[in-house]
Length: 183
Image (cartoon, rainbow, N blue to C red; front, side, top):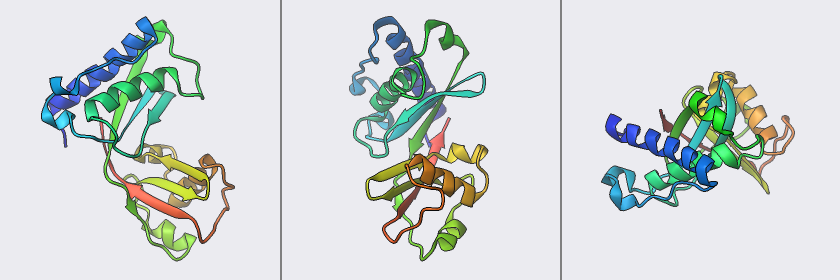
């Protein structure tokens, strides 16, 4: 768990990166050495934007490839300007924006013998899931439980997000679960 001070630093970075994007079209460039050690560790993050309680953008990565502070700054900018589901954020939207940061824990493989076995293992409200089958891949953050509270429904919608039919099942299906620190 991050300290409240470091959470506030990340919130400010996300906001500043979106503001920088509005002003210049580019993400805020930072020097990780300027931040506390806890924010220099490579971590995977997602930044989710809401406006008027409606999703306005969500971008992130599943593997830690850059320092936490840098990842948040980049993903905040990307959520505001590159999420293909939405038009780029406009200047009049910044003040009404709610910024949610999710820091992912390490994904762990789930082992199951059937879809029913998998559904029984899923922890509603806690697990984020990564689904992979061939070239199909998708993830749902734990926050998705707020709108999909049934484990089977959660899984079926995740299959659809990955480009598979909701009733898809195969022996090559892989599922990983992860938790997040969200603020």
